[in-house]
Every structure is written in structure tokens, then in C-alpha cells.
Image 1 (cartoon, rainbow, N blue to C red):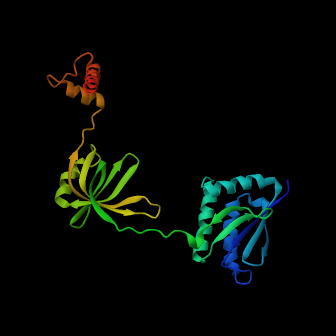
Image 2: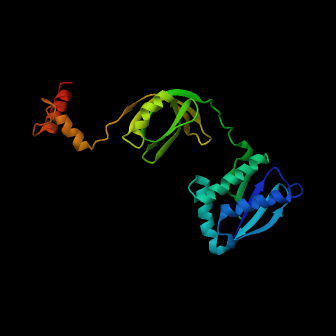
Image 3: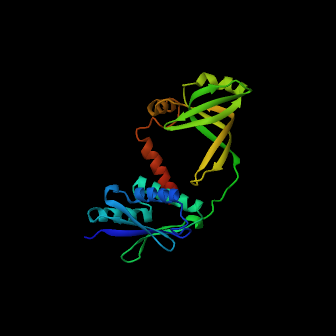
Length: 248
């Protein structure tokens, strides 16, 4: 197999107008995009639009081709996708678009939208009633508003605030049983499209039952006439459900 040559064409520059420092930035990002640095070489800068010609040694050409195909469909190693993003940012800042093509047939391997990238839609933040639940792991503050933090498994909720009177009621449950906080959250859409809660104002709370399921079930069964003491309580519930469907 022969070495494979690729061309990265930037429409906003020519060899005469491309600053050397900018060329170095593009080459650095391209090297990270291709990977296999020991077998990837910069060959020349061709005339016309700035065309950064580089060559991949035969030994790693199939691996680089697979890597670039993955970049095109968004299923490549993390460092390759980060390099693609870096190149896109360079192109946006230079008001340019680019293509990475294979020299032998001119096929576009990876397109870069650059300046043609859709403009991000900025939506205003808004407030909405919501709840949080978990264990209180911090509560306090020096001003008139008390601040708290809540741990819910792997999720850590900060930027929680409330009046001092409510904080005094909540303080005994620090590192205690789980609680549910009711209040008003401020939400904002992030650059990646995910909505994030910027802060949470607590209006009230309730302490949740953290007893094991078996213990909680035993407590329910201790209530007279609950039906859960029957030998086949589950079967009876299932039968009633089926009867309900048959009547429809």
C-alpha cells in the first residue's frame, strides 16, 4: 500500500495571506485529528486557497482512514473529536470554511462548516416550581439568606437558598434522613443544549422515610384490615386487575 496524501483546504486564506502563527495552529490541530503523529508528515502549502498538504505513511494509512471516517460520523476517539472542534473554532474565528480531501480522488473525507455553522439560539432563563430531594450535606450562611447543598446519589445540588427561619427548621436534618425540598428553580439552556438549574429557592420541605422496604412494608401490614397479611395478597391484586380489564 502506498502512502496516502490528504489536503486541508481553507477558503479564506492563500499561502501569501496566511500568518505563520495561524498556520502552526491549524497544523497542530490537524496532527491531533489524524493521530499517529510519527507517521504523519506536513508536505507543502499549495497555491490557490490555502491548501495544507500532508501525507500518512502506508503503515498507518488504514488506521488514519478509519479514524477520519469516525470523525465524519461523530464516532471517533475523544481526542480526535476535540481536534475537530478546535479546527471548527479556528475556522469560525477566521470567517472560513474548509474541507479535508483525499488527493488521489478528491473525495471529501471530513467537511468543516466553520463560518456556516448554525447560529446558537439563546433562550432567556426562566423560573419554575420544582422539587429536589436527597441528603442535606451543608447548610448555613452569614447574610439574611441561608444556603444549602443537597446530595442525591452521585448528583450534588448547590446554589440552594432559603430564609433563615426555614434553615433553622432544616438544620437538624444535616447528614440525616433524605428530605424533599419544594420551591422555585431558575433554569438556563447551556451551549450543549442541556438545561441547567442555576439556583433554587426553598419554600418548604418534608422529611422522607428512609426505612428499608421490608421494614416499611411490615409497618403497613401492622394496620388492621390492610389485606397484606393474606397468604396470596399479590395474587389477589393481580386477579382484580384482570377482572377490571375483562369488564371493559
